[in-house]
Amino acid sequence: MAKSRVLLVGSGGIGTVAALNLEAGNWADVTSVLRSNHAAVLQKGFTIESCDHGTVTNWRPTQSIPDPFMPCHPSPPFDYIVCCTKNIPDVPPSLCELIAPAVTPGQTVIVLVQNGINIERPLTTQFPNNLVLSGVSRTDAHEIAPAVIHHKQTDSLDVGPFPHPSIPVAQQEHVAREFVRIYSAGGKTNCRYDASVALNRWRKLVYNACLNPICALTGLDTGTLQLDDRSMQTLVKPAMREVIQVAAALGHHLPDDIIETTIASNPVERRISPSMLVDLRKGNLIEHENLLGEVVREADAIGLSVPTLTLLYNLCCAVQLRTKQSRGPSSV
Image 1 (cartoon, helix red, strand yellow):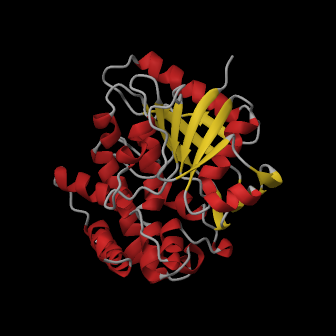
Image 2: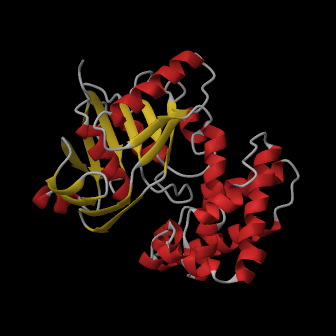
């Protein structure tokens, strides 16, 4: 069986680990779109300190290309486009615009290894003949310097299809399971088929719509935040309860202990800095729209009051504006 051709967009920590897993099983050739780290990878390859793969030096995917030189109508076509970029729809170019030249209608499967809800909607609208898969990643991998990756928590990836109205359900499941097979073949990851895509994404939002923005706005890591009972009782837990209420109103019933298990997954002693906090410390834009804004919009649409989430969202919008202004007029 021929190897699958994979285009990977977003080669930071998560994306590089994904590329490494895809190639480790020998069932995929990965073309990585590299931006700020392109020169470093060409010169010396990636250096990866990984809890799953050990120390990997001078590693390169099958091919590396610099942004914005996206392959246009590639021949042969890509079987998969795996998107591991930050999801920031309020800043152009959109993901649809970025990957459009590489999408072959009816063939290329788009895999979104990104956070948040409703992230598939722009893609299913622009690429109606292509299946879009959900990838929910639970790992800890960061690029600490150009082409230097620290991977500190074993790779865990849940993959399933976003519902597609014109593709048979059995085919959707087959395509998702085939990607799981390819991604898992190297034996260095925990990749599973996800039959409950929406529920899984809402489950992760209990963390990402709550602890993530609260840590970013306060400048506190999750461990320090848990030591302050006022913050936990007036901010964190009320926000989590609002996420649970919106999810339930939309038919996604989360486990009764989801608040306790979400908090417990961030032990005080680990002092975890969520991605929004890391981005703000670096002066980067934050991905608040799909993590927080979409939850607020879903609540508004059904007439459900979510005052804590609404306040957090508006504060994040203001912080995002500040970051855009610091980058110059073209970013606003």
